[in-house]
Amino acid sequence: MFKVKCLNNISKVGLELLTDNYEQIEAFNEADAVLVRSASLHDTEFPPSLTTIARAGAGVNNIPLDKCAEKGIVVFNTPGANANAVKEIVIASLIFASRDIIGGVNWVTSEKDNPDIAKLVEKKKSQFAGNEIKGKKLGVIGLGAVGVQVANALNKLEMQVYGYDPFISVDAAWKLSKYIKHTKSLDEIFRECDYITVHVPATDETKGMLNKDAFALMKDGVKILNFSRDTLVNEDDMLEALKSGKVGCYVTDLPTPKMVGVEGVVAVPHLGASTSEAEDNCAVMAVKEIMDYLENGNIKNSVNYPACDMGVCMQAGRIAINHKNRPNMLGQFTAALANENINISDMINKSRKEYAYTLMDIETPTTGQIIKKLEAIDGVLKVRTIK
Image (cartoon, rainbow, N blue to C red; front, side, top):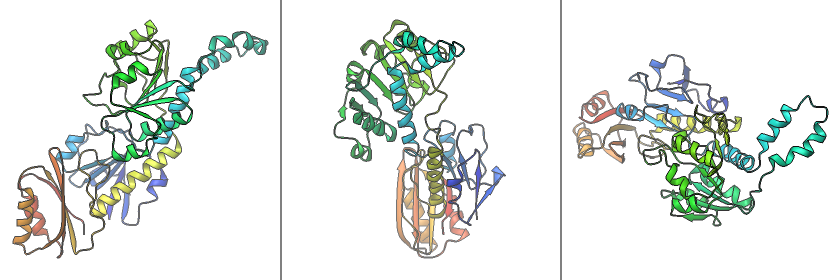
């Protein structure tokens, strides 16, 4: 029986996938797996029983990835599960950034007691006139699950779409419309585009990427959308760009004290993935990930361990080993099994930076003795018997 702890409300659509082999528990220190959305785990002590954490969403800044990797805890996220929700709000934001819809609505609300509102609207509506997006140039920075959908959708709305992603995956490249101009230069997007939307993770390389140097290359009045991370923008430089008119509008889904209430800023209360459909999709993917890991040892969409898939074990047993990525680890594993007269019928080993993961299908059932021998090898972080 696998024990699962939910640290936030997880959609029932996902939890209903759990079979009779799973029990939802309250006691964190007994959990085999944890499902989480926004709860912070940085100050959490992880019990020895914990093997996996699945984040029902894409961002994992609330999880200490290195700490988990060192304890042999595989952390999953759910890339693409909320992509459609984010795509739709980006489209909506692009339009209200281009036409001052929010300003107009707020003005109408302020005149709610005016009996002549119908006449007044005709006189004042020109204050909120804007531009159509058709034919304008849009730069999409980051062509992952969200970026590809945004680029394709706005191409269909007859925008000229430029896409930038030096690390685009093969899967994303196949999904990207042939009509998207795939540029290799970020500066080209800054120089050419009327609208820019960013869809990249927060890393040392992307932190503050939208700064005064970037703004200097952009068109006057450029409109920028940020539905990724607030740290991608140098806020002091953005304030100056808004004040000078270099940036005509900044739409962010990540409000900060510096940005809220500033003229030209539309601050959305982190609604990008806040749809019932997105929550269902994320929960379903997260639950499937932990089930495949617990039952088969397979890893898909981990953010701290390598992808690894051996399907369903058809042999007498399967052993999963989380370990450091060091020379001769495999040699020590196979030698340990050979000393116990255990034959390996199939094996896979994958590494990701300083950590690695090994699955071995064996022709005889595992024993407590062989597990102890594997655990005693220097560099081994966790050993599990799958079957």
